[in-house]
Image 1 (cartoon, rainbow, N blue to C red):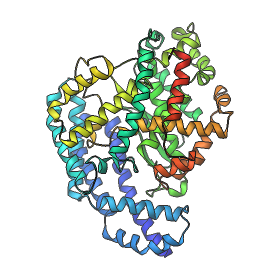
Image 2: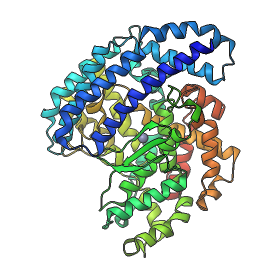
Image 3: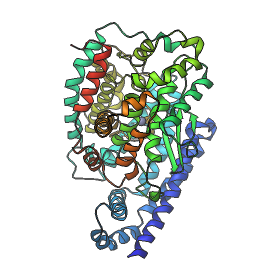
Image 4: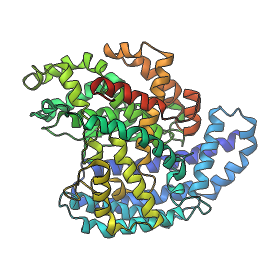
Length: 502
Ligand code: ZN
């Protein structure tokens, strides 16, 4: 049995090596590649993805998994070996349903679509991306239909990202959250907005990047196993547990942009860097779901990075870095500025309170598109109408409306957005539990010490990688299933101190 287990691992490592090489090509495409490389790069990544898919769906892996079933049953559920067989089987059974030719078609298409989007968005030219999106929707439906028997056509597309959640579950959670959120957002936005002019002076890029990386290191990001580069649409990526990279984007007239992007991506990177090293190269060596991943980026960015306690420690350093711009700005003014709540156009720049409304809009549209209730050509108008209903403002163009997010231009439609809001909910739930175990965490944060929090997260979440599913991790770490209460409490407490809420 040991020989079979070893053979499985060897095969998985090979798949991982090819996927990692494809990942490196993606990273390069999004950071340093000149636009002229686009066509060849699309072909190259498609080739690598196809080979990885063929190797992973090789019937030999299915046979090994079958042969290992008795061994798996003889093991403790919590053993790493059992976890690896379990996670691999789940992934394998899903993967064999997708033909390699379909995968290659999608990869080529999304790579082209992404390149077109990078040009069409600044030109505010929705018509240019429309045919690509139509094709993407067609492929998304085709993909879902490789998994017949679903309750909702979005279910098979949600599953690989947020295993354990179906469209109906997400709809229910979002419905409950919306009920609690809308009054909070309305109460805040009916009051005079926070003054954030202090964030919009001239902030030289280099100093911004330097400060952001100092914070990232302090959080616990290991720079011997990571680095940061610039991109259009920031992301975290990993080529091995020893090479976990983040990207950011700067705006010299907006201090918050790079700073909070860096904290966000650092949260993702801490998760990946915290995975048990023995899982290297296997399907266990990655965060367990989009929602749990996002819970970590949101926790570090918002719960820690936008807290008063954090800035009690870090604001003097920031003032020293930007003496001319912030030297006379009091901490309270700065803290209010970075927590400004306003109805704004861009999801990635949205505050913690209204952010979820951006996500709900996208989630609802994904379902409507997949159901056939909405067509791609209707998107720009539907976007404007829904935006006006939810936010009271109309996007002046498609560039900052329907074309603002990379997701639909670089992947399938369906399951792309719910993870962000699930992450907000889970971040608060995990943090509440960490505080229960270590009430000293807020005091530590005021002193710039994050190791107690980091260690709790590592022990309860990070180290397990994908050994447990998201519902299992949530239950094990917090003692209950996902619940929105800690998040609502968090928002009410924090924003109750900054604004009048009732
Ligand atoms: Zn994220």
